[in-house]
Amino acid sequence: MKTRLVSGVEVHHGSANVFADLGLVDAEKLKIKTGLVIEIRKAMKSRGLTQQEAAKRMGISQPKVSDMMRGDFTNLSERKLMDCLTRLGYNIEIKIRPTKAEVGHLILAAV
Image (cartoon, rainbow, N blue to C red; front, side, top):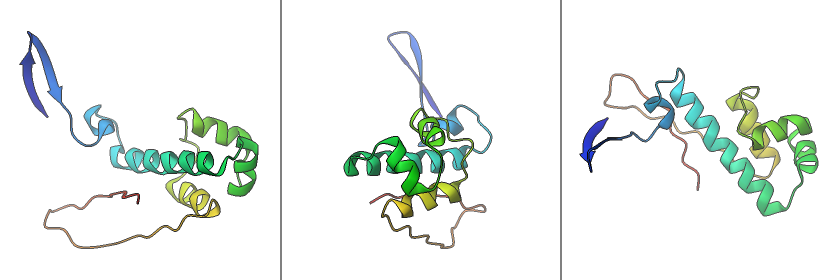
């Protein structure tokens, strides 16, 4: 993380993952889940779905949809969030490729 002074204030330039910048465990997992929830929210909005309608289509309870809309999706796995998106009419494609780094990472690329 780069640090510089701006008008006497120390400013830290973050990475592409705010969760990693905050030092949270499972930062990549949280970033992926957040991206999936953002896409679910977009899908609900574009289809004009209420939380109740979306819950029925996604196969989860309305309170879980409400939690998700408020940013609490700890009770839902990445797999379940992907399942929710497919039930809302989205295709999910997983690509696996080697990396030059010692350890690879997860990337969510929404089109």
